[in-house]
Image 1 (spheres, helix red, strand yellow):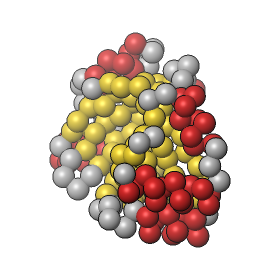
Image 2 (image 1 turned 180 degrees about the vertical axis):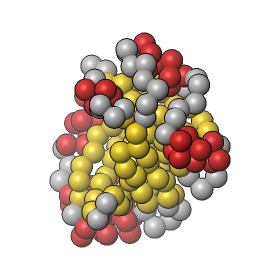
Image 3 (image 1 turned 120 degrees about the vertical axis):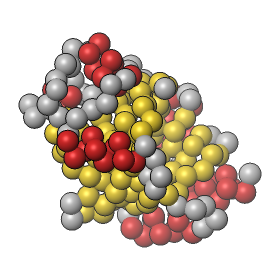
Length: 179
């Protein structure tokens, strides 16, 4: 599966995250683990391409993100958990869409390296301005808090997202949740 992903993000302070989290209290959070992958000589980073295996409680997916003029073309390949764990352990990739797309951009490596894991607790909901996600992410000894909005129109999304201060963001989030 492929689609154009246009997302806007902002880092939050812990207090801002805690305040917004109250607005998402009716949403069941999802734990996802993102294992970022590159070649030992960083061929993906060199081309500004990102690849990960994301695991959930009962399934996984391999994702390749290729920058476009606006957003990223995202290629997703569904995996079951045992497959994902095997690929991560062996540091190999399955045949399919992602390897085909890598070949198209000139990356033919058989050597893959798991750079690290980012574990995220995500609260996600559809709103009138796009798909909104509130994230608490843990990697190494660090925690980040982030609000993300996935939109279909970059200019409109950018206006909606950048026009709101944190206080407006809280009230907008509250309003969107009520719709």
